Length: 389
Image (cartoon, rainbow, N blue to C red; front, side):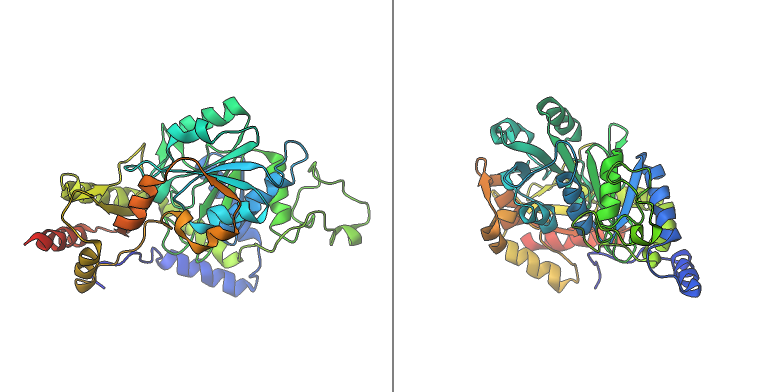
């Protein structure tokens, strides 16, 4: 394919890191995962980072940690404010723990949650807001943080698409009480599969460490306040305190993450250079609505929504892209309310999802990579310009 949606960012360093783990014979979560967690927390300026098997698992474990807090825990029936556009596993843990979701529309240009709808979505049962920075573009995290603080709500930040983005000098993923990250193949760094939870809250960190590994005490500091250690080491080694999961990462993934994190800043810089090329090609093209940057985007991809006033048919656009070897796909998960699985949810819609529907019905994205895409983006422009010839 001439212009793919994603490509590998690995080099010799990652291969050698994997080989060292293979040579050691230690594949389960160990010292490499611990080192990656330490490096990640230092990079993003958080007190704690907990690696899990995926960004989806990070959302699950993070949600579970809030359910099991000793004070101000989340409970079945609590209401959670969420944006209409995100990936499915932003929402699934909320459904699985019995919360009622309050969906609000997104902004047409940023594709992030419409903050003007927050007050309308608020009720006495509201306990949390989920912030999602779509495809590298920071949502209005400063506003969301102030809103949550003023209302006594948790802010859960699903940052799985936006590693390396920032707002007012602060990393996305670090505004929330909990932030989650993904290290999937197509994301800003890749550890094969993998994800992380970051928090400054010691109790949440300890709960997450127990929950990711069967709900046992192993791996949780003995000084933790979530359990009282017993004197019998034999029994303590297999003591279960929470209804947890097995979302542990592989040692291979931790080793790769150490090397990938070293490259992150440079890879984001290249992605941003590609974004400059993309914006130069399409910012004045009235046929398309492109994502408006808020803060400093890490540009996961390049979104394009066909302007309703344009004389363009999306299927004709898709045919032209396919014929020219240009990959394309739905913007994240589109409007989540439009998927069959919504029938399993307890939810309300706060207003109409006009912009989420527009993105769902008229939008798509093309890829960004940590390498120069001038040739690919220029060809994309040529292909789309030829639609009107």
